[in-house]
Each structure stands twice: as structure tokens, then as C-alpha cells.
Length: 142
Image 1 (cartoon, rainbow, N blue to C red):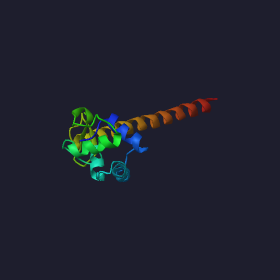
Image 2: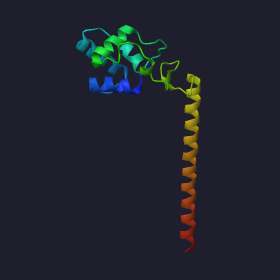
Image 3: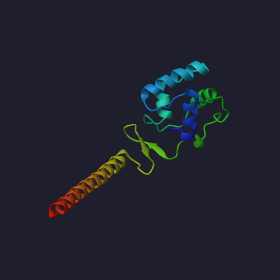
Image 4: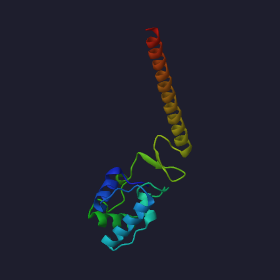
């Protein structure tokens, strides 16, 4: 499960950079292992940041390592408050907004957005053509 934004921010702050790509997760996993002397895999980091699919709860071992890394007692026991309730993992491993319960719904949502954007672009284009036509008409009358 992906961590809540609050805890992702705490980890990124401790690490000194944002986590956006799998390569960032590899660097963070190495840093956590160096700092805590406890191993953690880049795949675990990817799951924590919602970059790959995961439906399992956080293991006590992972909680311990992250708690040690953050020097925090908030991580002693797995807690649903650590999990981001606004996201569920999509079938392809992408993070899908919770109102889209499947990857197919996300795909449809993206298609609807693209279609709406295309309609706006067409409207703007036609408005521009109409404006140019009006200007041409007014200039040609004088």
C-alpha cells in the first residue's frame, strides 16, 4: 500500500530529494540501508511510494526500518493512518485516484479529459478564425 502524503514527505525530507521514479527508489533504499544498517529493497520503496502495485499491508519489519530511518516512534505498529486513503494501486502499477477503482476507469477518465481538451482547442481555434474574419471584414469595408 502507498504511504500517506505526510509520511512520503517525511521520508523525502530526510532523504533530501523527491521520489518520482524507480531510480529514485533505488537511491533511497541504499540510503536507508546505510543509515539504519538494516536492509530494505528498492521494490519495497516503490510500493511505499505507489510506483508499483501492492495490496499487502506494511510488514512490521518494514515499519521498523522506516521508523528507524525517520527516528520516529510513530512507526512502532502498522497503522492505517500511514496509508494514503485517496489512492489505490492500478493494475499496471500506476497510482489511480480512489474514485477510479480500476485502471480501465482511469483510462476512460483520461480519454474524457483529452476529448474535453480537444473540444476547447477547437473552440479556441474557431473563435480565432471568426475573430480574424471579423477583422478582415471590418478592414475591407473601409
